[in-house]
Amino acid sequence: MTEDTRPTFGIVGGGFSGTMLAVHLIEQSDVPVRIFLFDRAAAFGSGVAYSTPNDKHLLNVRVGNMSAYDSQPEHFIKWLAGCPQAGDAKPRGPFVSRGLYGQYLRSTLSACLAAHPASSMIGVDAEVTSLRAGGTSVELETADGARHTVDRAALCVGNFPPALPVKPQTRDGAEDRYIANPWSGGLSRIQKDDDVVLVGTGLTMVDVVLDLHSRGHRGTITAVSRRGFMPLPHKDVGPYQAFLTADALPKTISALVREVRREVEAAAANGVDWRGVLDSMRPQTQALWRGLPIAERRRFLRHVRPYWEVHRHRVAQPVAAEIDELQRAGKLVVTAGRLQDVTLGADGISMTVKTRGSESLQRIEGAWLVNCSGPQLDYDRIRDPLIRCLFDTGLARPDSLSLGLDLGDDYRLIDRDGVASDVLFALGPPIRGNLWETTAVPDIRKQCEAVARHLTAMAG
Image (tube, rainbow, N blue to C red; front, side, top):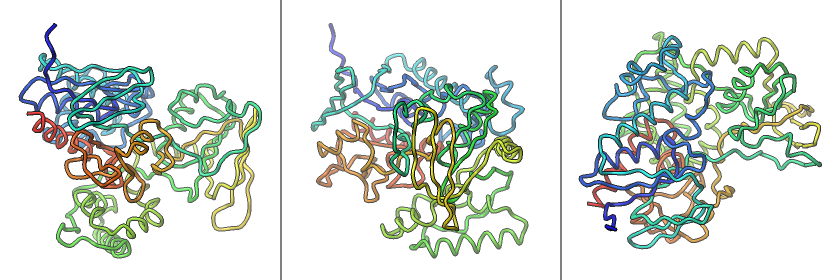
């Protein structure tokens, strides 16, 4: 049997970043390559985000900005035009379902493999729980004990499930009433007349509410978060001239806030919506973040982040309209306050909330508790076995804010001693602490091209 001498890459995570990194590795390499794509849910080509079958789960970005290729902005639009399944989605406007986008990513991967038959991609339906890295190779071990040796590996693990802000008190059978991860399939156990309590009022909350409503849910849904902020809707706005320049970016959060407010007021005086102002910041966001001192980044996370999230990460107008209607009908109740305690029991759940702006306590009860508090961002608390392995062995370390993995040039992982790896790389949400804006397709697709370019050059 002939030894396979093709450059071999391991990619952990089958979502957008993992899929498009595989595509670019195959397309950019001068020689055939072999790729192991690991995904615990076997969601190769779509990941969790784009595997939802619910057509009400729409993209949060317009189709015109969702091409998988940064260099081919019309790629997704052209695919939609030739896709029979897109027929029902087109009337919904510039936002299509995330499930349809998952089909697009799988189609893109399939087309790439068909066009490069000498290269191969092997999907591994298993969780990577540990790895060992040497100077020229990486060995990845999965939960079933299998081991795969590759030349280089990239972590495209996406977001980690949320964690409750307080530790719940549990009684017998409590696990039956608490859905810690909304994407685990547990929502199907909720009966139509059950009252449901959600912790969090962001994008995940919106998805869960839409999912329950599409199942004919009739009970009351109560959503709780510290400020009660919900994502704001998109609105058609024209291009706005950038007011931040690369050579004069603010170095403090207070200066940034002043500039943004001043620009929003000036735009409003000329009849321009604030969304245009924020969208104009996008090309400078990563440079702005990297130019801030660590103390200022912490100040942003503490004081500004909640406001940034709801204004920056908006929802499609049909989604916002449906959420508004559920609120008006009293089927969705949003409460602002700090969670004091949570009790989980076999028959239901109860929690105490300190109402925002007062000292009063509110008792909220329901049949189910669903954690919608957003992805876990404190990497010191994440218990994922692969992340713990990286930290315990010193192959990686958290960034200075513990928002993700520390990163050097060319997306190389930084080890415990501050040395950049030659064989381990990361992109997407795990490098949030280094770039901040690294969760949306327009940001990640640039990373995929850059990492693939670097890896293929090294392999050559």
